[in-house]
Length: 162
Ligand code: HEC
Image (cartoon, rainbow, N blue to C red; front, side, top):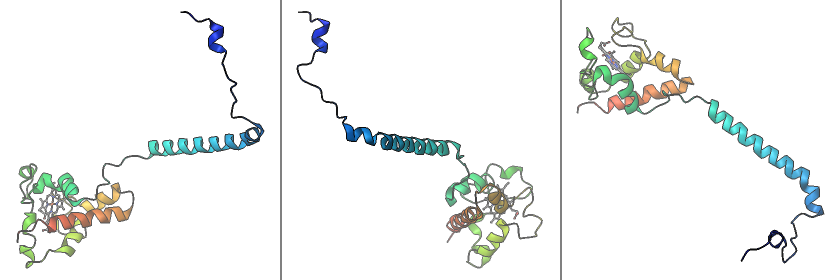
């Protein structure tokens, strides 16, 4: 059976909209609130969009090692990474640093080397870049660069043969 148009529109009860005088006086407040919520959301979305994702923010020693050192020193640290053959000087076997230093990890030497404070010709040459300054150039702040050097050092310290 077909129903006429008027039958659909006519409701068998009275619809009371939840809109009385108090609601009316609250209208500007609600509007302002909506505007605030909207602008905060927009600002948030905007900042998320414009904050650049920096691929070098990793502080994990393992990740950093894989990214910056393994190509020459090898994943296992023994000095036979894929780029090693192209170098005039063989990359140091990083698993033997303790042995070469009387059983102790040469922390100070490592830090100096990373920061380019050793004047040996080999360090800071094309063969072995000064990573500390590279890290500082790419880090958003100096602490991050230092954190990276420390976690790299811890990682390499963990590589030492017993
Ligand atoms: C382009 C190749 C290359 C890369 C990449 C590289 N190294 Fe080296 N590294 C060398 C060579 C070659 C030597 C040996 C010559 C020298 O001592 O400078 C060396 C030596 C070292 C030494 C021993 C220094 C000493 O005084 O005995 C350490 C420690 C070291 N590298 C750590 C690192 C760390 C940490 C990274 C990554 C952040 C890294 N290297 C990345 C090539 C490289």
